[in-house]
Length: 116
Image 1 (cartoon, rainbow, N blue to C red):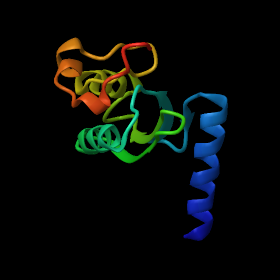
Image 2 (cartoon, one colour):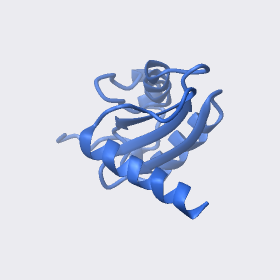
Image 3 (cartoon, helix red, strand yellow):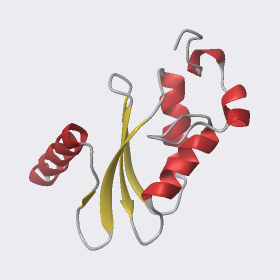
């Protein structure tokens, strides 16, 4: 079990470094998505919403790098659907901007400072 956890951790690190999608096996894929998340509340919102989506197996969001790593079942969802879901929560996801309505409803601590 430890070896499997170590292997997954190394996979996360390599994906974050190379910024790509990696198929783990026949059904499961790992993707790293750059987000606009900046605080614990952002992290809680994104993880909570995405964890309820069909096909999402594991989620890790680094606030330091603003990178979201998701292991998902490619039969049940896709990268594009994950990015769109993040946008609908109010955060950017790679090149997809946050839904303006959802962004406006975020707490102030989750919004980008005006100078960015």
